[in-house]
Image (cartoon, rainbow, N blue to C red):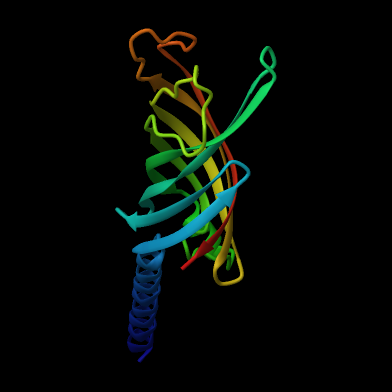
Length: 196
């Protein structure tokens, strides 16, 4: 009789343990970036439309099209120019703290979390606005490792902060000077957005 109770207790313990492991495993599989999320963002220097598509449970590929703003001033001539330049970006993002956010009962919807990314941006030599007759815009590609944070405010609104330092390569044309062949690129952004 005692052996039968001990056997039942052991089987019950094993059953509860397996149930616990199964529930933790199934919960861990549910912790993932969104399959696809789409939104629009604006910041101090531009406006952008973006989509993030899931590659793995923690990695999303962000594709983005927008207009980066620039202000140029020439103190010698006394002119100031405001232009906008198209920007095409591909950015794989690793949202590394989703599990910790879930364990603390914090939101992860809309890919809310901290991320590390590799931001690759192309600026063509197209200008929205007017450049002085003696000025020429040089197209470029930048590759910038970035650390960032995205948070939701309500159901649809988001804000995002990011910082990174990387490399920029300018596509120089003949008879153009004043720009190095390559250089240091900086990504510093604070964006407010709406998620559809």
